[in-house]
Length: 297
Image 1 (tube, rainbow, N blue to C red):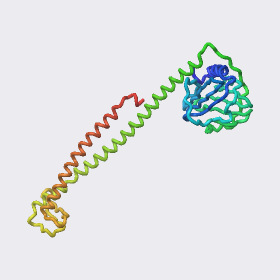
Image 2 (tube, rainbow, N blue to C red; image 1 turned 90 degrees about the vertical axis):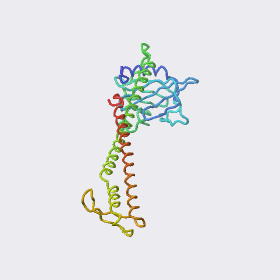
Image 3 (cartoon, rainbow, N blue to C red; image 1 turned 120 degrees about the vertical axis):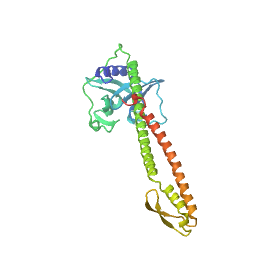
Image 4 (cartoon, one colour; image 1 turned 120 degrees about the horizontal axis):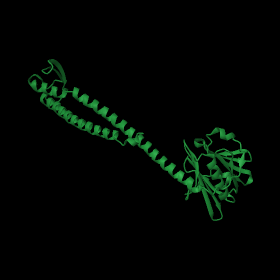
């Protein structure tokens, strides 16, 4: 049975009516944006329930243990230590109310993603838990109310807690899968960008053979180059075209040739490093693309 079924909500209201009469509201706080926790007390006895909601569902369940944060912010401070007079259910609707002394009432609307809790004083809205639901700011207290009876044929605490356990466990699994898919997609994009950059660098090296050519041309023409030359134009015996070569001042033509040979050698090493990086990146990309298919429903 869906936790949003109005018949089940009536049974929950009946259980709450039995449990909460004569209790005082001790705390009402939220640890995250998808829950609202209520803790009631009577002498040394406490009772708690939690309203959970997300984009698909809303339901009430009964945590066996609740960790109260230090100095929790009370969502409804107007109800601090308020006495519970009873719980009623709205006829044929997915909502119920908790009546307190001094004319205050909490309306619980279990409307899936539009779930909300509204505090009334008499018939006037005093406070709204989810203020982004603008229509609830002008809500009115339902009039078609029924006093629910306790249905002893169903263990509401067990039923709701089992549903909550299964739903939240599945939600955690889905959220984890979604997070992993997002992380993997980002990694694939980063690796893809690195591969593109790597390919551009390799293409640049493949087209750049000047250092080796310039060194060969200088060595073949040492006799025709003076120490004072800042640049020379030599016939390229690879292309049969003239090639301009800028020389470093203060060193001999042979030393300039050796300098170009060193640059050429460094290019070769750089190419080897880039090729190894290319191989590593491709392996990393293949591994990312082979992640379990379950992550990509």
